[in-house]
Image (tube, rainbow, N blue to C red; front, side, top):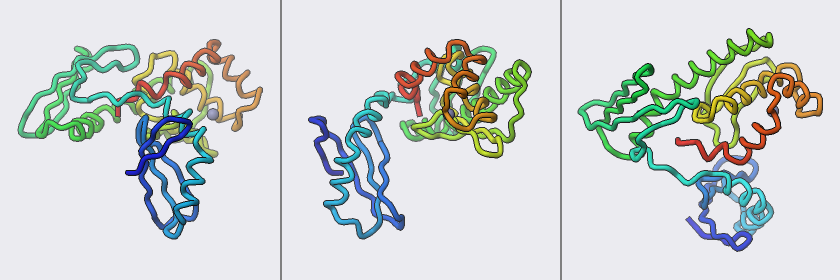
Length: 230
Ligand SMILES: [Zn+2]
């Protein structure tokens, strides 16, 4: 890790040289990022690339929430419902999700942050997919959408995407948002089934599905990724 000052803010960064053809930038936390570049990239070019992208780094890093401790979580809010979470040290990993009692038992063989994350995510991710599919079915009843395959991912900077073939993909962590914002993200991608770009026509159409479209969009830009836990 090296340190660099960008607009009088200090950032840590690491350089990864690999078999790629262009320089790329990835945020690691509020105060650190990674630069990936082709093997033979000279240092001055990397420095120049970072300086040229300092605005992007400052804007996007400020949106990353302070990393929360997973093992320190006592409750997890999923679509406005609070689930009590119990951490239990056991011989074997398992997660018991009592949906109706709003309780999650996380049984862990190793009590570490990264292990807790991995075990809990393995249970919450399929749950997220279930919630997303259920809501998409409901929205389709209301507005008649015709979509393809649904998948969930963990993209730090995106909430969702819509492919040319009508397949939809969502960041599974959108289940940590309040329900209206969660619904807004789904409707955003569903609107892309008809209108691929972000034209005026797109926003008008989305507003017919979600009258508070402007407010939700602004909220997501400001607060969205702060609610990501993983
Ligand atoms: Zn879009």
